[in-house]
Length: 640
Image (cartoon, rainbow, N blue to C red):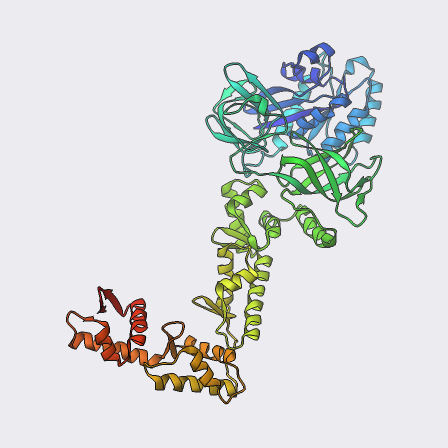
C-alpha cells in the first residue's frame, strides 16, 4: 500500500533532517535551499518496507513559504508534526497544525527533534505544550516520538510508528476519475515537459491521452515515474512524475490538474462550508477578497457569506459562496484553506459542496441554505447527494457527461449511483437525461395546468397542440424530458395525447343548445349537399342564421365535427360529409374493378362517377392521392 505523509512545523525544527534520517534522501533539491539551509519549496522522498511505501512530502516551515506548504499538505494521508525539543511549539507550528486540521487530516504523529540538545525534564515540558496544542484534535491520541537525527536515537522507533499508520489509513478512493494536482513542472532535455504531484485518484498509464485543467490542453503521457523509478502506471496515493507530449512546460504551472479527458470541468463559482479559526483577527465578510488554497491551487477570490448578517465570526462555521477571479479545477468534497489577501494569514478552512454554482440571490437565501445544509450532511448517501447536485438544473436535467463532471466520479460507479437514485425516486431518467424528481413533478403539474387552462379558454377545442404545450411549459427542457412527462400523465389517466393534440381526460365537449343547433345544421347541410358542397365561409354563415352565435364561434363547433370525422377536410375551403366520402371511395373502386381498363380513371370518368364538375373533381382526386386511394399515372389515376 502507498501512503503520503507530510512533514509540518516551524522553520529550522529539523523536518528535512528527519526525512533524510528516515529515508536517506535529502529532500532539499534547490541550490538556494542548500545554501540557506531552509526548505523553500516542496521536497520528496520515499521509505519502503516490503510492499508498503511511505512517500514523504517535506514542506517549508518559513512563514513566507506557507503557500508552498499548502500545496504539499493538500495531498497527504497523514502528518508528521515536527517540533524541535529545544524550542517547543512556535508560530508556524500552530499555523501548520491548524491547516492540517482544517484540511480534515485524520492521522498523524508528533515527532520531537533535536532531543540531544536538551535535558529529559525539558522534553517533558515540551510534551505538555504539545498536549495543550492538540487537545480535542485528530492528534490528541497520537504518539509523541522523541528523536535525534544527530545521534540516530528514536529513528527506528519512528519508522515503526509511521509504518503503523499504513495499517489504519484506508486506500484512496478508486471511484473518482483520474486527477493529478500539479505541484511542479520542468523540462528535461530530449524529453520535454514533466509534471509532478501526488496522484489524488485513479491511474496514469504510459501512452494514455489526458488533459490539463483548467485550460483543457490535450496531452499524451510519454513516461511515468514514481520516486525516480520508471513504471508502466502510477496509482492513487503515489508521488508521480509524468512526461507529457503535446505541450511546452512553460504552458504548465502549479495549480493545474492533469486529468482523464472530459471527466472534469473548470469552475469559477463554488458553494462551500467554511470554519473560521477561533483566533482569527476579524470576522469573514461578504465581498472580502481572499486567497483560496486547495489541491495545489492558489487563487484569488471574493467571498459571499450566505447568512443574513453577511459575516462569520471567529470560531464559527457557516455557508459561503466563493467567486474565483479565474477558472479553477475542483470537485465536491475538496478541502480548502482561506488566507487573507494581505497580510497573508490563514483564517479559515472548509470543503466544497457544489462546484458548478450560480450566483446566489439574497431573496432566495432560506432555500439556498436549506439545500446546501443537506449537501453538507456527512451522512447523506451518494445517490441522494447526486440528486441534490442535479436539483439546480431544474427540468433541463443533466446528461451523463455533465453528471460526471460535477461529481468527479468514474463512469462505472456513477452509472450505479444514478441507477440507484432512479430506483429510490430521487431522479427520473429520460433517454440519456437525469432530472431531479421534484423538478420533474413540477413540470408535470405545469403541463396539466396548461392543458386545463387551454380547455377553459377554448372549451370546444379538441385540445392543445403538442408543440404549443411544449413551448409554453418546457421550452428549455430536452424533448425526452417533455415526452416522459406526457407519458407519465397519460399513464396516470390525467391526459389523452392523440397525434399532435393533448387533452385533459376530464374535458367535456358537451355543446350548448345553440351550439348543438349549429352542429346539427352543419351536418344536415353537408349531408344534403353530397359532393356539391358550399365553401366554408358560406356554410358557417348559413349555420348561424337565426342564432346568437357568430361565424367565428361556429368555426369551433365545425372543428369538433372535423375532429370526430363526421366532416372531412379536402381543401381549406371544401369539406365533405364523411359518409359521402366513404361512398365515393367505394364507387370509384367499383368502377376500377368493373369498367376501367387497368384500374385507371381520368378526370372525365371521375366527374361522371361522382356527378361533379371539375371544380370539385380536381380537389377530390388530389385528396385521394394524398390518402393513398389513388396514385397519379400520367394524366390519369391508378385506383389502389
